[in-house]
Amino acid sequence: MKTYWPIVLVVVLLAIVPFVTTSNVVLNFLITTLLIALVGQGWNMHAAFFGTAAYTTAILQVQYGINAWLGLFAGIFAGSLVGAVIGVLCFRSGLRGSYFSLVTLAFAEVLRIFSSVTPITGAGVGTLIKLDLRPEAFQFQSRVPFYWIVLTLVALSLVTVRAAENSRFGAYLVAIRENEDAASALGINTFAVKLAAITLSAAITGAAGCFYAQYFLFIDTAIAYGPWISIDALLAPIVGGAGTLFASLLGALVIKALGEATKLLSGDAPGLDLVIYGLVLIAVVGLAPRGVAGVLTALFRRPFRAQPEGDNG
Image (cartoon, rainbow, N blue to C red; front, side, top):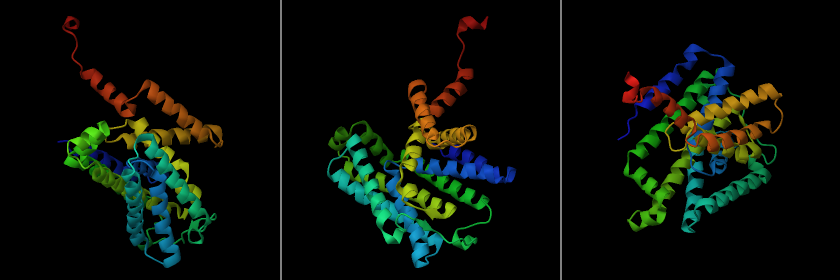
């Protein structure tokens, strides 16, 4: 059984950052990095879950005066509900692989078009959440509380992933990933397992969407259902090392640092960050297929490898 101490160690180290520096630049960088890492923990169709949850919490506050904290849980529920509905439609139809990915992208695009013409979402203008710098309104004068909140969400997602790895549910997911037909033949209810997985993934991604809306106090169709969130969320685990616990966190840190460095050197040239992302993805796939985690593991183990007896003099 895999342990939880690496999660505790990483979270504690990250939690003490505000005690070292309260720089808004540093905290904003880390908050957005953790946000990408949180979305990266999800499974496919990130934009649909992210955008639905973000719009839900924003609309409830702006249109109905619902408390932001209640809106957070409502947004997470809405995101997971969308995941469950889409999961039922796709898995009942037997969609897999690239076909499933294409259909999920189509769902996100339908939601984007719908939200761009619906008055309750602000249509093409978007929804602006009223500034109310009180903790009860999920707004703070400092970035430190936001940092701890998103770190808590990431920690909960990591614990959830670790718990799944140690459970029968995780074993079922691995079996389905390796050979769904064989898993079904062995008696695994593949439909129920995949539906639970996509619903859980949608809840995690929805939490990220709600946090984004509260942090930036604005959401529109390009932000909610645009390709940027899916690109970051898909690229982060690949760069970090797909299949490892901290893949999304490591990958998010790398791509966010590259993005900021690119903007600094290029004067925020439009589209250049996507070019950099593409080059990084090609480099990782070609040179380091196990991602940053694989490279770090190899570097860490190398000094501890036993030397051949002939080298002992």
